[in-house]
Length: 513
Image (cartoon, rainbow, N blue to C red):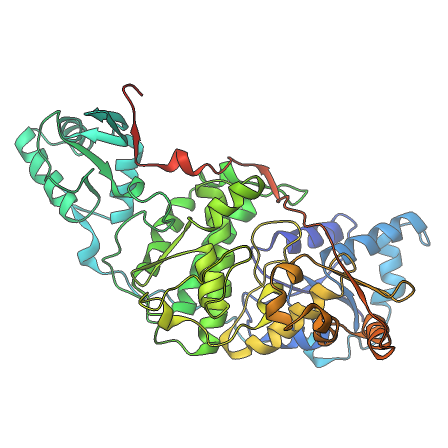
């Protein structure tokens, strides 16, 4: 008996949308979960030549992803070849004997693969409360964020934002942690300060029970460093790739729960999700990972996955930039602390992943000779990274998962998948014109040494009719006109805040505020 097979992931909204479309029509399906059986990913790649999920098969025939499957089902509804979609499924799919025939479409019979467990947290990382009980660093930080007073406090014409006085801190700690004496609250506060949960605004004073000394929580101390929710003092997973997988899973849950039926994400609601605080703390572990020990393929896969995760985190935490100036400010100032060194988006992309090359419109390379980050750059820029990095815009390539063991094959697939879309690469043989994504204009030097050589450089990223047409155009020796599509900077946001770097300042100057 034939069937529908879906390669899917647990928290994939597009997978849920596809399965829901089948369920509402009472059409059964068989799911192969890549979350439970990650080794089946290689079978999916071989069968579909695509990295995205879901990938849907009607018996042995590959239908495609979510949009392809929904379009087919809607076509069935319109054609009404049978009274119901279920009857058409029964007649054309399930009636086929011994299908699917390809063994790679069979559901594994072995137990699901358990994800690599997170290394146990150090007991010493917990905070000892005044009543001698223990509380996690995450829970204590949450309580401080949710309850500690914060305002703009002035001193000699300078205002310290998101700060509180020593006296306010002592009063809050007494109430929140049931401390009877102010002197005991000061002692507890000094311990929290030593554990880096807050600090003096100028890092000059320990906590005192006074009104004229100002302090700020660590979570608000470095607003442009996205993973500065806390200073990481816990154990460190030596497997940085496994850490990113865990972080992506947490972020995936937040995204999935805050995405509507149209695939639009409420970034404001995401920051209020119960798992958002969990992510905020967990991502701080990146402060202690070691990039230098990674191989080139490990660094390449890690860098791409990190960039794509960082964009989602930034859109939630500091907002979405608007306009050319806003985007420039965003990509050149917001970033992560990785292994004790800060990388903004531009430095991660142009410094590490592009081998320390100038960013579009810039006059200098990201890392000078004495910059300690320079020794971590990849030796050569692989142009295919531009089909893998997603900056949050609609014209960007979709987000995929990359692995060090299969990075070259994965980049091949995403390059061809991106370039086969006619709004990214369009070969117009009649007018001898090649229309390209703006990405190939901005990063043209990664693809070829000159614009004249660009058509030939793009041939490997095409296939089928488009590739044949472009080869004919090249072989004709006629000058090929190259035109670049406009870039759509729209996002998938249903609700968000606007990124404003000035609003993230720690201080303001003025007579009043």
